[in-house]
Image 1 (cartoon, one colour):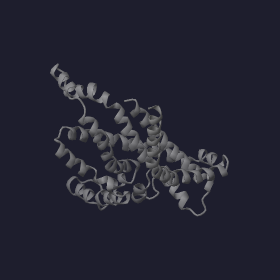
Image 2 (tube, helix red, strand yellow):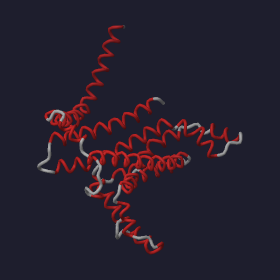
Image 3 (cartoon, one colour):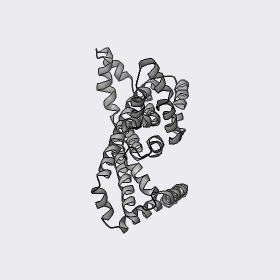
Length: 279
């Protein structure tokens, strides 16, 4: 019996290894191999790449803007996503599935399409901008300039990051025991206090995970920002793009900046995973 159990265990382990091998192969070819080349380029320059970045004011301003962009986009996405998920959780399953399908559509759009869409809507001659000018007398130049700033980028990023938050929080809220909320309200607690003292503490872990995910995406993304503002906004992904596209770039500094950006996004994601694993 023990011998048969050992064979079954080895057979199961071999099957799992065989099923996982294509994914591990792709992961190695398209993550570890490129990362290894980048790390090699950074190490070839010794500490010069890191010291050059640390001495650059452009790098520090880009880091500050990237972190600000990530925090703003994450706060806005989590706030809107939580409200939408609360509403979806109260719907019947068929209606909820239909709305989730519509809400997930922005996830299928390219960052370039999202950027051009916001330019057509909120740019100098955009539909929303001209409508606000005609109705409220808003200055179209000042209004459109807000889109081409870290705050405008956070608003644009939240457009396609909010669906990620909705998809993460909706299953949690669907399976939440609403009897706790009903019991609190029956004892005289207000709706706001019930949400604050009962619902939100139990959603803290998934909300932190969602916050970390969308913050990491906002910090590391560059396609939407490149199409929307070019290199007018100083953020780390656009710094890296400029260095890569420049034929005379310093490869050691460029590779070091890439590793720093990857490390920041990994750290943010790690914090979210650690918080999510606690509950």
